[in-house]
Length: 302
Length: 251
Image (cartoon, rainbow over the protein chains, first blue to last red):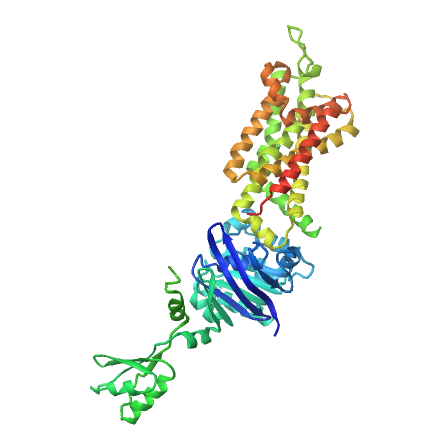
């Protein structure tokens, strides 16, 4: 598969601050690619460079074959952008905004369908100022899609959405991908990256510190799978000899076995071999959040 | 072109939904006209000392074309700069740029809306003047129309320039209102220039509106084309327009 977006050695500084420092990645057509990081990590600057909204200091970027530095106008017509810190005139009506932004290209989508999909039909005649935060956000996402883009950039798209609306939004983004649109998602929200992204790049202090599928990331970086069960047997220290087990912690009847690799199966087999059959044997897998904390050393949702 | 047409139509509707701008650009000049008409009437007047005021014509014949210019100035010093800085401040310009709405569509739509406001505002002034005071009708319409268009271009360019360089909506409101009232009073849309002191009159000569008023009054009153005034207006248009495109920022 040829990359639809390629970034090589991207660098952007604001005076003395290095916002993006030697970032490289490719995005394949039809992929949902996530940039995950805390606020100020350089995610937004990176995608703004891709959308020809900022000029990078160095690096080579191609989006749909266009160079954002020299072919900005042609590029912007073919991509969709949902930006942080953007707005519409207070008194513009929902349908007027969609109608206006659809006029930039002859092959725009039917905005009535977008109104329906994003739950804005009842609000079609409402002014932008009268919309709630979630309704505004949904309108701005719909605007990013109305020009029928080949690639769409969504920067913190579920900010301001309640949990139910968030799930609906995820479903709609998956549908967009099914139709062949490539999605670049900027988020600081672990669950969103895990639920939606085919591949994730973790961005920290202007650099990409890891890039993989969410599952691959967990497998590669997270150690400390924990197998938990309750057992009456007193001496369970022999469990330390099972391959992959690093530690056994006993807390009353509750036993926690820490380790890595396929320890659930191995521990279970060893227990059964000794006649111990706990009814509540379960495993706690590390999540993307554990990986993130390990790689960046800080809490993303600070 | 499609985007320009759509955006212009949206901007017309947005203008009509903004009561304060409608009052400032359309109602205020009419109110001033009634005040001036009430104070001075429309009889040409040479005062006791033998000084000619209002260029020797009836006060209302003087003020009607002057207030065409006042509508244009309300657009150029206040309405446009406030509109553009508010768009920048809120991220509307950022949103437009990301959706490939060009600077030409943006400014082109504002120019068309400004022209419509100026035409409607001027017709309102003429209509209310005619209703109450029996002023003269425009004498040289063939010259008045190009003078009107040049005056509008001049103040629209000024509005684009102020909208490009002023950092915030508050700055645009503050500076815009000061410019508007100072230029109005010293430039010939307040008291007649003949009664200003020498220093005031000298300053008035450096206001843009003084020249736009003369450029409009001369064909309106049948004095012909005012070459000097039109050159000043053209100069302001070119310089302000170039500076506006040079300093225009999306965010």
